[in-house]
Amino acid sequence: MLSFNASYDILKWSDSDKWSISGRIRTDATNILGTDKRFDTTSKVLSPDKSGFYGELKGTDRQTYGDLITTVNKEFELDQNNRLNLNATLGTSIQDTRYDASNIQGPLKNDGIPNEFNIFNINQGHGNTSLVPSGWIEQTQSIFASAELGWNSYLYLTLTGRNDWASQLANSPQKSFFYPSVGLSAVITEMLNDEAKAASRNVLPYLKVRASYASVASPFQRGLTSPTYGFDPQSKTYKSITFFPVGQLYPERTNSYELGFSSRWFKGLLTMDATYYLTNTTNQTIFSSVAAGSGYSGIYIQTGNVRNQGVELALGLHLGQEDGVLFDSNFTLGYNKNEIMELAENYTNPITGQKESKEFLQKGSIEPLSFILKTGGTLGDLYTNSDFRRDATGRIVVGNDGGVNTENLANGERLKLGSVLPDYTWGWNNEFTYKGFSVGALVSGRVGGIVVSMTEAAMDHYGVSEASAAARDLGYVEVDGLTIDPHSYYFARGKNRLAQYYTYDATNIRLSEAHIGYRLPRKYLWNVVDVTLSLYGRNLAFLYNKAPFDPESVSSTGNYAQGVDYFMLPSQRTFGLNLKLNF
Image (cartoon, rainbow, N blue to C red; front, side, top):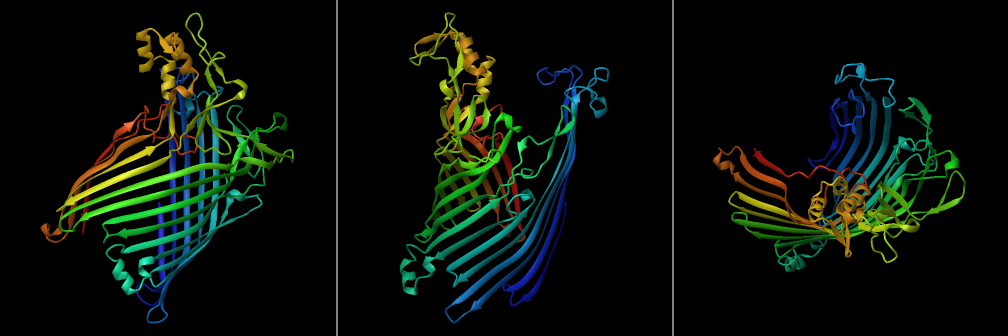
């Protein structure tokens, strides 16, 4: 990584009041090398060729960022009792990202050297051999400005604005996007006269209220509005895109509103903060299927309105004196309601030119489990469309041999399992200090929501789960008063991934962190340095959890990867020793 910074004071009225200009440039290059080695003894499920398998990925990822910013800080004395503070910024920036790589992989030659992992030993003529080049460039050019006006250190107005020209918007109607914000805050207790301040000092020494509006935009993914070619590793040729190229796409936008206050009570003994927020996200880019006769595999459309609204609360208790025993206890609570206000309604199909609507969209599926988006639902709603075969009364159909079968639900129906999103979350942090010693712990909780374990389904399928072993020992499984063969029951339930039998409440309470430490004052070290030594642990233990895995673990950062476990790695418990020197 290389970086360069420079700044210059154009005018300087004082150490804090000045007009300056600064510039930065930074470039970071990463060389990528990845290998995939499968020996000739590897299971045929993972490597079907007897000589082994080898893959090699080579590439570079380069990111360059630069900006030029001018800033003005100035205090204006209007009269003896009033002053105005100005903090203003104007700047421009560029972000350039370039990726270039090639990946070759395939079975090793049958007449070559077994387990010799290099690209020259790959069977180039094998159908599973592929050479895939990949690369792209993204660039965003921006101008931005901000201004904060402060009146007598108790009333503040903040304005920001930014305009981005993103390369992803090429050939779309909107070549750039602007997103502003405005915020107003007031320290109420500083606005009082001296008499009122004195009267409130012992009860409410500090009260600040705030309100803000912000609009944030982001481009859609690259390549959607420009004709491109994709490389087919099977035929080793380039093919034209398979989705319909759409030019009428716009940046995704989120508009948010926020109200809140911060306060201290009884000379700082208690603190209380509260925030209410409301956000709406529109112009979300969604991939949708089209008629097979169109010649395309799908089409990207933009529609939808997803709302998030909620409340965040924070309460604090602060006891003791600085030179004696100190105890701090802080409790936080967060509630968020996610709702799809509008899905895909009355959008224009660019192929037919007709208005269309979709009742639901299916995302992130592990059949028969899938996320289904519907108006009035949430982005985390999980559904399944399969179950045991049942009779007219809803009882499982059991054959003469005690076996059972599964089937899809009638008329394309789906069974809603719940939402992976929590109802609310909370945290309680406690810290105790005395004469340099400190000990603290954080307990956190998540309430509501569901998780699904596809790992358990796979283990039932192969008969290696604890539940299937117990059923075999018993000799039968009893469901609704029916006796079922344990092998047939768990084999059918697991192989067909009947998610409703592997769904758990995601509510959990854990000891998230604990630490103990000691600070040795500098007076014992020739007044040179303070030394703090602490032992800490994170994600230490579950105090309550009914799921067979950590409900907070995710397999990826995507929207439709939460709440589903499919042989994920266990969550980590961390211990550490921290040494801090303060000169």
